[in-house]
Image (tube, rainbow, N blue to C red; front, side, top):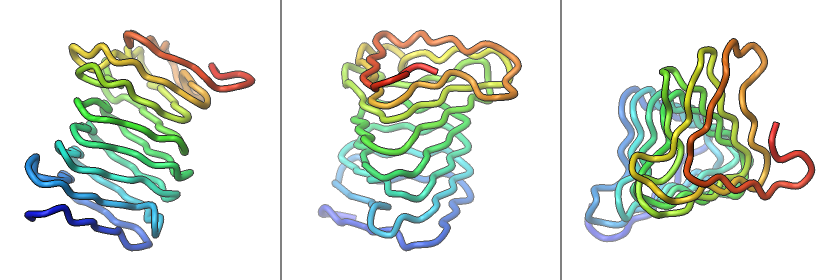
Length: 178
């Protein structure tokens, strides 16, 4: 729609049986889960288009495919974003709360900007049951700052996890790498 509308997601569980596309690359739109903290499940790809904003809340989000952020993904809620695909794009990611949990389903998954944007995440878990390489966004030179804990692998993983992101900055206190 024209203009810059804001949509607030209702409480409860929201399931998208296919692809979720936020915005149309031309008109600004804001979608927020921060007010009512719904649980959001998407079975296809998720795209946050240019000039669109998606704000997370305390509800968990499960995305079973790739997440492309060309707009803005932000939030300070406690929810976990789980994905079996990559999290990349040319946009801005600023998640000061919660956890991003990427459990790759293929040999290579990407985490990070595909251009020069620097991304900020709170806690990050990268895991896979077979060997996987987590690389930065294709052609991206932006850094990924993790303010909490970076966890490589989960109990039951049967192989190694490798990272080849251009710059990872760990700012957590205590044990920021697990």
